[in-house]
Each structure stands twice: as C-alpha cells, then as structure tokens.
Image (cartoon, rainbow, N blue to C red):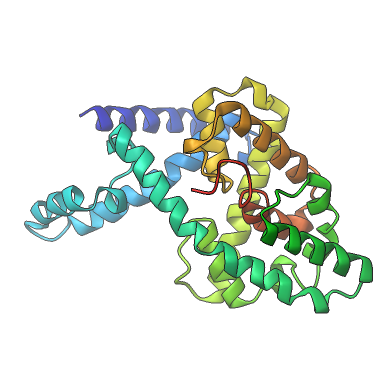
Length: 271
C-alpha cells in the first residue's frame, strides 16, 4: 500500500509537470533539474508497470503475476515496492551487471588507437588506457583531451560498431538485444537526456542536492554510489559535470564512454 501511495503521488506530480509544460509551451530540456529527473524516472517506472499490466491481461493470469512478483521482485517490481535492504542489494546487482561490460569497452578503446589519424591523440588515448589498466582514476583534462576522437571517426556516435553499442548498452543498463539501428537510437536518446540533465544540474548546483539526490545522480551516470560517502559522491559528480558541460552535441559519444572512464577506478567504487 505504501508503494502504491508513492507511485500515485509520483504520477500526480508528473501530470502537474506535463500540464505546466503544455500550458506554457515548455520543452523537456527547459525544465528545472528536479522536474526533468522526476519525469525521466517516472517514464521508466511506468514502462515497467505496463509490462506487468500486459502479463495480467489473460484470464486468471493475475494470480501468476503476483507469484512472479514475489519470486522476482528485482525484475518485475519498481523501486516503490522494494524494501530498504532490497534497494541496496538490487543496486549492487545491477552495478555488477554493468561492470561486466567495462573490460570490453576499454578493449575497444585500445583497438581503435591505430585508427586515430592524429599522433598526439593516439598518444593521449594510449596513456588513458594504460592509466585505466593500472587502476588510476583519470583527471578531467585527460578525458577532455580526447573529445575530438569521439566527435568523428573512429568513436563518433554514428561510427560505433554493433558489438561496441551492445557493451555500452549494458554499461547504461539498457537492453542490448535490439537491432543496431535501434541500439544507436536508444544510446543517442539516453545520452542526450543525461546531457540535458547535466546542464540543468549545473545551473542548480550540486550543493543544492540532498544526499539521496546526489547518490541517485551518481548511480545513473555509472558510479555505484550506495557504498561511497556523500562528499566523495559530490566530488565525483562535480568532475562529471565539468566534462559534460564542456561537450557539444556532436561529442556525446565521449559522455557515453565516460560512464566507464570516470567510474571504473574511483575510490570506493570497486565493489
């Protein structure tokens, strides 16, 4: 019942935001940070609920659905219906799943080094990959130095290969079991939304966020923040925003890879 009340309250808030957008002709990217984040999360929750609704359509299937929800709460229930312990446990499980794609993504970055035409950029990419393998957390300038590689060939969003996109989808907790065209579209859309959220968050300021908002923002961007102190999370989120707010729309492939680059060796994140 508590979960239903929370979901109902979220639905009413989302409706108010959408009504205000319609009345004042406001686009999603023009919303304040908290309203943008609320709509993004609510859409994901509703999508999961719709799946359960479809399963319940056949006669007497609702009994089976209740059993499945009890047996598989992580897969079938949304966060409103998780216990506090389940929330921590399930976030750890999801992070372990996305961590499995990290070595594959770094391997692809190493493989494209010979395809980079600029010798200076080749050196920077090699240095970055070496640092990552040694367990060193890269500096913001180390990552931004490579932005040109991610704007065009070989790592631009439109140049990514199918296997690369599948690995990146797993790192973003998106389903990789789609055709290449749909994978590219989903990655572009998801990364664009995060970029828009970052711009709104930069206007608000990380210091204005509550501890829970900070941890949620970090988790969305690739960091397993459930076991990291709040101040470290704020520091990491500040580094992320430095990178994100420096990028143009044509360079969003770097933001996509940053989910791995900035999080994999951060202190306290290797769980």
